[in-house]
Picture (cartoon, rainbow, N blue to C red):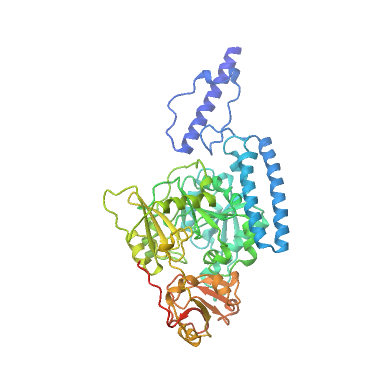
Length: 566
């Protein structure tokens, strides 16, 4: 009887073991195991098998609650000392000391993660690191796309470890019905104003502010992943964020994790394990933590929130981590900022990752390590003048310096976005191209370029402000100077405007037009008064704005203009 009882226990344990193997193989994308575990591998008497956390790598034991609690107490002590020190420096307004302290505390947290939690096996600490993560889908009036988005999210591995929300803007009953019918999603609701003066992008900015304020302040989540209602997702979408969340505390030069690559076109990407840093805020699927929202919430703009996030005065040199192969795919052909032509030209050609990926290391994304890698590429790169690559030439590093004036032809030949800043790190873009590595570098701004290839501001450049409604020829002429159009590219940021006009980071936004950068002393309505506008368009000395003052680059009349070969 005892032997029969033991055999039944062994069979039950063996059945559990096979079920665990099957679940693991489904998660990591391997075929089911062909053989049963040998009976000799089971503990005598039917002792329980080791428990596995199948969210992570094969055979990684799950940490016990006591182990996680111990690490939690230790990290709380480190965080407490960090916050007390940084708060003291903030109150004393010592910017240089604050920046240094943020960097040093980031390194301290990095050492803690590598050493202080080393007794926890595997990746359990990574999961614990996001204490209370949430994911929110922002929705308005597209119930069909929303239903597709929520169904795709429900199929994502590991999504159950996030608290799930749909934030509905407005009163669309079909949208509400879709939310109610999808299991696991909690509904947030923001009424929509009937003010006809509000644009679609202003409504969107309000919605983002409402959702983030609710999740971070009212509901006290530690991290929030934000997506919109027109996306489908890779199977490792949730696991991707879990594995990278710790970087936001390890490196103060990082402020978001993105699941989207602006240049993730099918003909340019292939490695789902490759990650990179980008100075250009990607949007379209991104994660921030509670600390960043505390910084942004009081300055949140009333329009074009994503453009605002890209301003230098807001990002302050910080970057986002993004994947080579995107973890989400945009399926909405029509939206507030997109039409069918743009969707077909760009978004339809994006590649979506189709397997679960576990990153063996993320230390290469820390700023010093990443800069070292980029410099190593530049040190062995061959300078080229076009994107033409002869057949059979593979494995090379090619460097193509450019100025904004000729980027259109480059983007056309590579089938990229026509805006050069997307996906760049320090104005440098790294691409896979015909089995080579191609570096695109802005000659005016990329610090990795050798001096012989750089274009610097004119050595006699002076910045002059125009009167309201003037072009740039007139104010330069009053100073005995002439407008130098090539130097406008150095003025396309809010810091330049703020040095001459009373605008601050919350009142600086991206606009369109050759008259940028400008300051609006008296806008068409109160919210526009005192606002600074910058643009990614080419600026013209002859352009003017009837209600704006321009910031003009002027040089002596006898000085020669800069000449660039590319």
